[in-house]
Image 1 (tube, each protein chain N blue to C red):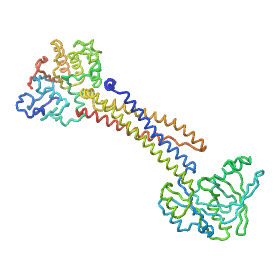
Image 2: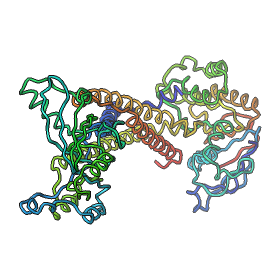
Image 3: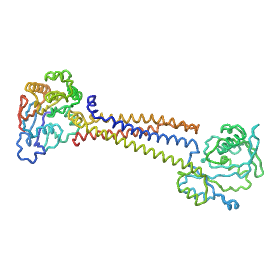
Image 4: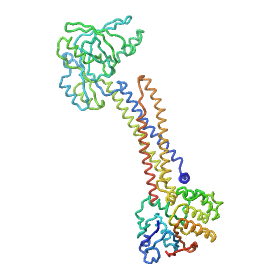
Length: 399
Length: 214
């Protein structure tokens, strides 16, 4: 085979193969980076609900008339059913407000000892973005798990504590502190312990488990009729769906604009990543074309040699092999280098991710490797078949 | 392979000619293993075509060519490769050597494929044909007569039932032609093979069983 290679490597154009090599390297590296970045980004998505695009909170606009008429800004059963039937809605849940008085204070020495009137709301557990085992309530428990909005903590840390020279609080410290809660209504007054189990970026309210809310509303509410919800949370499959905006506008509903923006960002990012990957694919396809042209040119220039080899008894497979091995070797080299580039670039952006989201855990690079391998196999298979066909055309003396 | 038969074989280009008078074209001819044939021809009577047809290199003919009774027009790529490696050896008129390789490499590229001849035997042939000192010379730098001798050695580096030599001595002096004839007949006899030589005038002196006019 050494002699055959010595013969067939004649006329190999180094510049052509280098051209292919770098073009393909760029293409494959872009594809792999696209796949990997998308994956890493998705992991970010599930890690931090701020990126999560799929939830919108809807309420009716509060105008002068509705505030006087009182109940008008609540959602009726029919309205909820109608919303649920819309194609862009996956699921909806109602915010249930508390119909009793709540007072709360921190029972810590030295801590600013103020108490405050407050309220609770609940949503179905499926919509709660803080996953905690403590998020349960059984009738008779004196501990109430509570989820606060993340921006409350920010308000305290970056506004109040900063200004007053008070220590900043982490989620962990707050979780360990006991919140004293007094609930009054329907002629009874009871004390409870509140435990902060997490901070939500999705739900901008003071949340308690729905099970507790149902029970407490039954016990402390002055009138036992369930109030109609004034806010709904809906899970949508695509928040940039234009139908959502027009639907909400038609019915005078409002939603959290920021959320819609964040979701748009996510969606736009997905599109950008897709476009970049398509560009990578195009570059790869073009470089593949260069490679095929180079190999065909090579076969053409060496056609007499190839023909003579076939005539002295070499089989078409044997004669094709050097060129097939050459292209496969190049493809493998490209993949290895592309993976190396991927690792380097990834370590840079992962560093950034971790700065912003300390809890971020990077997923494996398996998906990118798989995509790379599939590309390698497909492209190499094409190369192998194309070279063999070319050699067969010499066998049949068609060229 | 014990016999090669040509049944009314005729090159496509001759089909419309009525003046084809030949012992081979459009006849029934059988070449038998172990016998030595001379096909004499004038220029342009299709001597090289005959070699190409039998070697599966060209298929532009009418009639049939049979190897042991089997029509070769149905041969697969694999079958032809086997035929060229194990059954038919051919010394092309145009040699088909590789000018980039040395004389020895040209022989080796065939012998490594078949693994048939010993290195010692090959060197002995180089010696007999008086081209030992050319062994490591690039083929492209050698004269046609020298190349012809190397080509013969290459054609013998495989097992064969028939050896085709297409004008093997066109550029050789009588001494070298005799040596070549001796090497060919020895090797063919050793393998029990047949030889089919062609010529357009000066022919190699062998112990022919039959002479055919193309």
